Image (cartoon, rainbow, N blue to C red):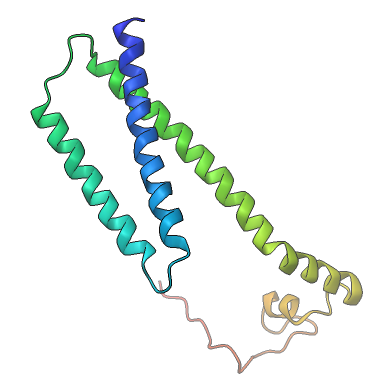
Length: 144
């Protein structure tokens, strides 16, 4: 295998190892009582940064390592991991909001789109059927 391919794989491996450590810490602390996950994730991040810095400053680079290909592997793996994290987050958000969105859709089908209070709040003040002033919400003053 060429030095370029090994360098790119090494960069992708560093990103994969970092994300694996993060996932393991998150999974281990998810069931813990109290706010443990955030400090544990922050500590794992600091440890990863110090270990990587120590390795970069003390371990000599192998002769086959190409800095450009290493950076390309790092950036490519980071882009892929961000896309996967975004897709996972969007899927879980849709799953969590599913019951709320279905209930809202059922209300609109049952009452019609103009009968819901939420629809009235979106109309400008003084529009037909909308109150001129709603005491439940503070008035918004535009500055400018």
